[in-house]
Length: 313
Image (tube, rainbow, N blue to C red; front, side, top):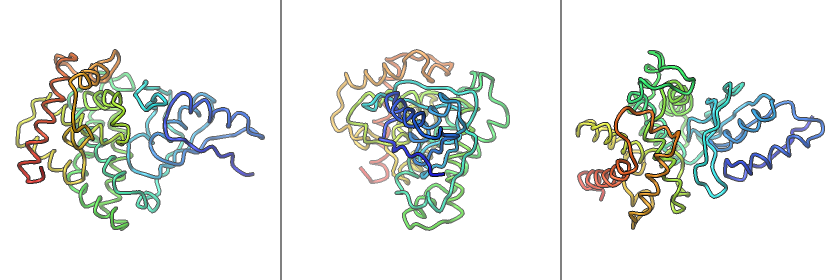
């Protein structure tokens, strides 16, 4: 029996889900299951289709660029690439298979993006310990341990894994970071919860000039914002910034691709970041559009100062 193939066009939107769902339902004989083969948005699209059509789904990521593969949710966007909503499912994928001999062939930028996504996991989770997680329960000690281990691996092996990826060399460090990006971060964010970093990512999708960025790259700038919101001491902040810069993640507006930032754009980002139901409301501190607007400007200033400090400005 030959498989029914549907090529993903690049955006996890309701329109793309409808188009691919039609391919599935019009298949003769009917499809018994769905296989997601690709990056994070491909995986999220396939999970949504499988849920809608009540068929099993196997997720086979070809990159380690996000923590989407294991999760029981999909992040949906408009066809133009702006954040639309989170879609939650009753169960996780039936199976997730990660072949690192395939993942190693992806550009190193994908792994770096995954590191940016995974680095937010522990930083956000520790700020929302008293808020319900995606399972509508409070985070457990196990989820805390998973989030902490995820961060530990990134600091120990992140740069080494990126160098291995660039050399197309399958090493234990690369294997460890793929596990952290895909499994530990996936389990961590679902069980630990999200906060400002991912909400600000969603806000940044409102700017068309940032649509070329990967998910984890935008999340990473949101993580800098989260660290400032948490009043992180300078020495600890610099530790995080050092890791981010070492793997090429953006920490300034210019690195994001915003060379001339307008206040109206930043306020648009802040407004979307604070939309009802956004993950930023899991925090127990004062949150408003004005707070996020100032965080965005402060994070860029901190990023520029750090780049000047390390001689990379």
